[in-house]
Length: 101
Image 1 (cartoon, rainbow, N blue to C red):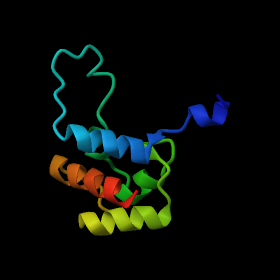
Image 2: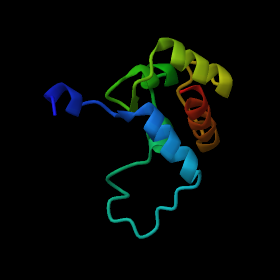
Image 3: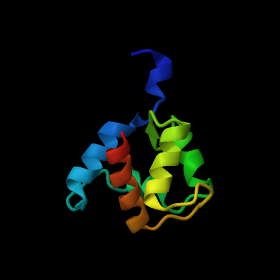
Image 4: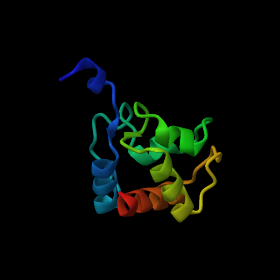
């Protein structure tokens, strides 16, 4: 794998499909749960604006460009500069990400 690609986050389409298929993540009997937060947990309680998090290809997900981020946030009813997301908002965001992508 090309070294620059190793630094990228998970693909947005694949991540949103996986997340939407599971909808409720049961984290029982997980040895690495403390070390590896879910994608929704990566989006909640952040200081950075949600749009900036979506555009950061090494952060939460990769493959989201400017217009895609705008469309996802519009459909989710989330302001681009919002820094605090609830779990419900994060779930809605991933449902819309799956729809848009």
